[in-house]
Image 1 (tube, one colour):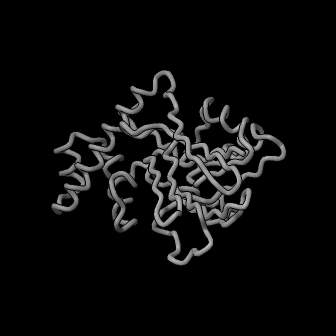
Image 2 (cartoon, one colour):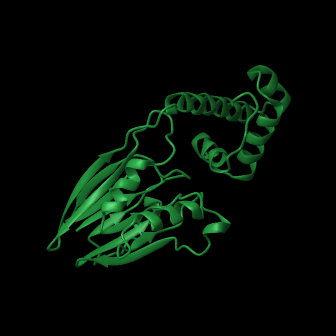
Image 3 (cartoon, helix red, strand yellow):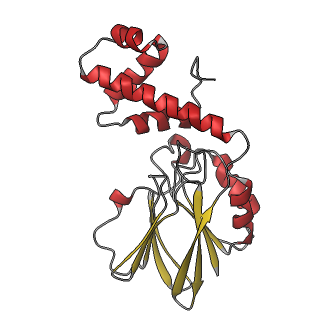
Length: 231
């Protein structure tokens, strides 16, 4: 049987991803879904008999309260563990043969002690120069084979990626100014940035200790924030 494995859709179901889902016998989603509309789109596209296993990601807020943060399940005699962030994988999973996670937006596939660790990457909104990927698992008689799927970008996506790159650099510069003890007025003046944007980044950085520039950009993109001067 074939299993579509995806993660970090962030509000976007690409046509190629839907094609894979339609042909698959089961679907696994590693979180950062963005909205119930994405789940509804998967349910509408998949085979009626194909099960959907899905967990909540760090950007899936109140709307996703009905979703679990992790799942254990069995398909064709193979035991799975599914979670959004690899750091949340428990240390004691003696019967699990395949661990699936997401979060980093980077495809990875590693076998350790006969256990597969698989991150399908992100097949949603493209960030920076990262690949757009998902995976297909082929199961037969308790054995598996992984097929990496490279998803083509859509028209006009290159310019959107450039805008995200520019935003990330600006966020990093604002954080650097804060760590030097600069006031928001000095940061705004030195970077020639919009005051509202600087205030927003400073608030997020103060209220979310340990958050990175990438994390702040994720929050902005997930909330569909409109930023003056970056339309």
